[in-house]
Amino acid sequence: MTAYDIVKTLLRTEKGSSQEPQRKYLFQVFRRANKIQIRRAVEEIYKVKVEAVNTAIAAGKRKRVRQEFGHTSDWKKAVVTLQDGFKIDVT
Image (cartoon, rainbow, N blue to C red; front, side, top):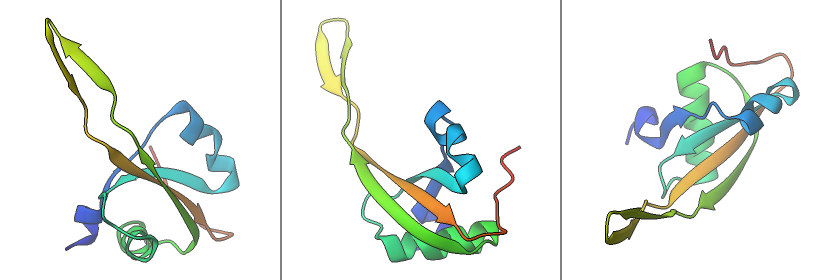
C-alpha cells in the first residue's frame, strides 16, 4: 500500500482552515490505516515532520433519492499536527 492510498485528500473546510495557524491539517484517510501509517504517509508526500496524529471515524449520512433511502459511506479523518518550522502549502 502506497502513501497515496493511505492519504486520500487534504480537507479544505472552514474548521480545517482555522486550525492551520496551530500547524494542524485535516486529511481524509483510508479507513483501516492506523496513526503510524498516516504519519509516515504525510511525511513522505509533503516532506514535513509530524508531531502528532489524531483520528476519528465520521459516520455516513442518510440520503434520499426520490422514494429510495440510502446512506453515504463512513470515512476516517485525521488531524495531523506538524513540528515547529514546518507547514504545508495548500495553495
